[in-house]
Amino acid sequence: MNETDYEQAVNSLYEGLYRFAYSLAGNADDAAELTQETFARLLVKGGQLRDQSKVKGWLFTTLYRIFLGWKRRETSLPHYEIASVESELPPVTPEMVDKLQNEAVSESLLEVEERYRVPLALYYFENHSYAEIAAMLDIPIGTLMSRLSRGKEMMRKSLAAKSIGAERKIISITDSTRRKSP
Amino acid sequence: MNNQEAKLILQAYRPNGQDASDPFFAEALEQTRRDPELQKWFAEETVLNNRVQARLEGAILIPSGLKADLLALQKTVRPARWWFQPMKLAAAAVILVSLGAIFLLLPQKSTQLSSFRETMAQSSTQTQEHVVFESHDIAKIQQWLQSRNMGTNFDLPTALQAGIAQGCRVVDWNGHQATMICFMVNGEHMDLFVMDRAGLPAFPDNGATQFASANGVMTAMWANGGKVYLLTGRDKELLQKVLQQT
Image (cartoon, rainbow over all chains, first blue to last red; front, side):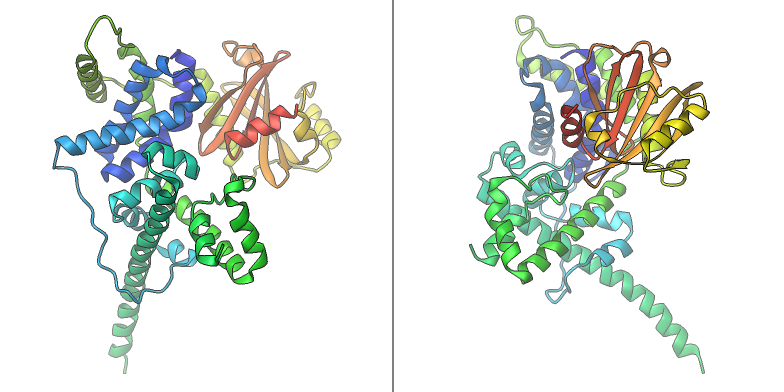
């Protein structure tokens, strides 16, 4: 891979790759290391990629495989479980998402089980198509549809729970103020 | 196809319309046109997806030195020679080198090219005083630019000529001045920047277009007739489509 192609790949893809890495690892240090190792592999093996239009898919697939390799070797990476949420949660709305802190939104993604989180992250970051995601994860399209749907449902339950939590905090302050009034 | 099946398929539909012509979604999209309840669900789903996507991108901040570290890897990582070392050794070397790079390499100074691209992309995403002179009339825009000693003898891509100009301004970069003209093309916001190639002599005038994202937008850059052109837009596909019509 020549210098221009490599720089172009870094410029156009590193942000999406880093966000995907963060969604897998759950912390900034591991996400940066995953991104670096992925691009290092591109430098080593990029010459074997005959079709330059496939660089994007290759990078995301490689990053995911490196992550899986880490997971097999290490047990120290954080494991996120979906937070227990009440079954009667209201459907999440764009307004509810707007009221949440940025961190709460990324936490909601990280709380989704990994098998649902990975396709969801690929869908949200860099706008991968269903066919690209299915190819990267090597799963049938039907399975991908189910995982995307389930992943969105899990993330939205978490967002709704966080949204209600945020509202409750505001209500409790107002209520306590009212109680003190004569 | 019932509504449940249509919803399952439409969960994978990308909200920016990239999948509009994909036959995989055709039946489900047709179902939304027939069923008002499904149509309402799909509209809400699209808005929600857009919102979550935007918030996620804002939530995960990119480390400031990461890009420079990645570019610097070129100086330390070399392609493996298959006859020289076994695969495992190569993989171990890559891991060691990339780990070392994190700690040892200092961020590299941005190249002139990426500096130009970043500055123009920032101007393109600037919402306050996005244009200084507002007009839909390209002739008036030319007059305004000429009154500020900006050359207007450059080629507008055909697709932009068919779009609606919104206005213009002059952007300073490293002592050079670039013309910016803002367009709406089929509902898509795009900005065209033109600068004398003397400001970026290293940029190759070989007819090739370089695509790169900067500051949250995609940029396409090419040189022609002593000018450097940079076009910004939502994504690479859109820019390629616009430039193919030239």
